[in-house]
Figure 1 (tube, rainbow, N blue to C red):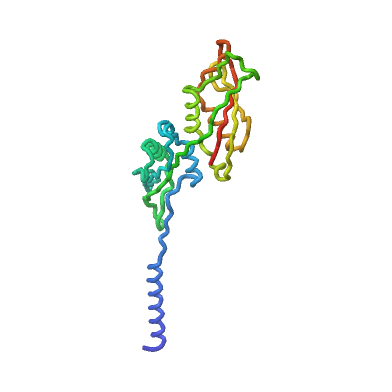
Figure 2: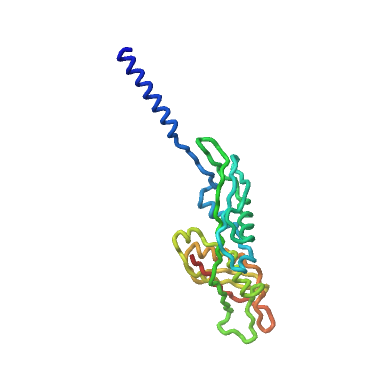
Length: 241
């Protein structure tokens, strides 16, 4: 065999080895499933839809439920299960909201759409220090004056706040905390009327406090001389990380 043929044979052998080596070290390119809009949209969806189970709130049960599910090739969610349980009611609420999720952008592996498992932690955290304060329209409160009352009393009002207040993600990312003082009118029929921020902390916290006040059910109206009257109700809502 002449030198040219030997060099050609050697070159082909080297190329074959390089090709085999490249195949052995090929990177497995995997793109996991994605919630429409990304992680921020997923967190927002959970915050907007999670409702704290009243029994768990009364028992002051908190924790992080870990939920796993399959994102199918179509993007639809299937086989939802709790990987880490905290409390029966919290587990059920986490699963309920996960099943409400819209279709995901499905996973891809080496360019092919595939089924893939996805895990989401769902945190349940109660808010504290939410004592309501009462303020009437006048500076002097008559002896026979009865302030408006939330159905079930102060304890029920605190529970309502704990269940419904959601910490705004924008404020949490900036480590913003504080007590927003809200004022609103409870009219003669017990309905919540004009709402305003008496003491602001942050735009996002103010907006969340206002949102929750708008969700308040009818109160028992204030009474003066045996007649219902409209009064201002002052409510501080504390946001604490």
